[in-house]
Image (cartoon, rainbow, N blue to C red):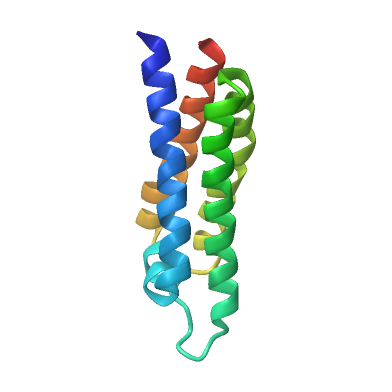
Length: 123
């Protein structure tokens, strides 16, 4: 019973990373607003696309580990990758973004990723 939940949550979280990455690559300004720190209209879109590529890479790497390396490797991946949403929380707060987004989106994501890591380690 625990195995499908552990793998299911891990797959959902990694697919969500893929989605976020693709969204930042295709609609960077709208994605930045959803992130919690809106982009400046005359800003350099390359930095937003870098974030998109980072998230897309995290998602694809996670899916590869789940598919080919097993629960233990995927658990370590989730544990390490939780640094990103924790950092995102601090970035949104430091740049005056909404606390609801910082905690309700980024910090909550970090908690979900850590729960996923714990479940994968328990399998």
